[in-house]
Image 1: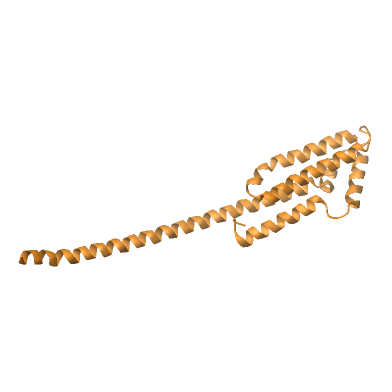
Image 2: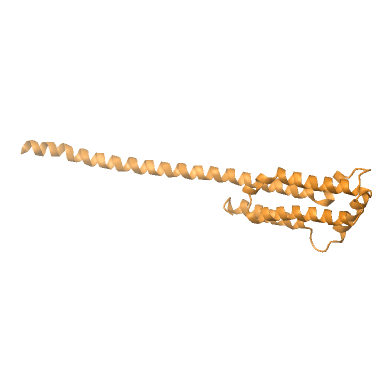
Length: 180
């Protein structure tokens, strides 16, 4: 009986130390894993925010490049006909849009739909104005009509509205993080 007490005298404290050590190590490992997960999530959010901001930048650049007041002077060349200029304008808008298609995965559905809508409105406006002119007329006539349209349109241009929407969403992302 004395030997059993002697064995228990050494084993019970050893078991208590073992259980206590196990609980301390487990708590430390769980806490360390949680800390690493939080750090990884923070890094991922930083990357996501940067990608989203780059997408907004590219879409703003797209909208600026396809705005008629920027696109028409850049495309116009003396000797072009209305049909030549119309085709070149539409081609450039579509090319710019296709170049930025991948940005839709980084922005909200509302922003992407707005950008698509601006593209279609710009093309429709160019086609509508070009249809009112003779196809073989000098392109300067189309140039003048587009400029007149821009100057006389009531309210804001679609590209200006889209720029405001992108700006507001980018501000939300900067202030709230990528979940905005």
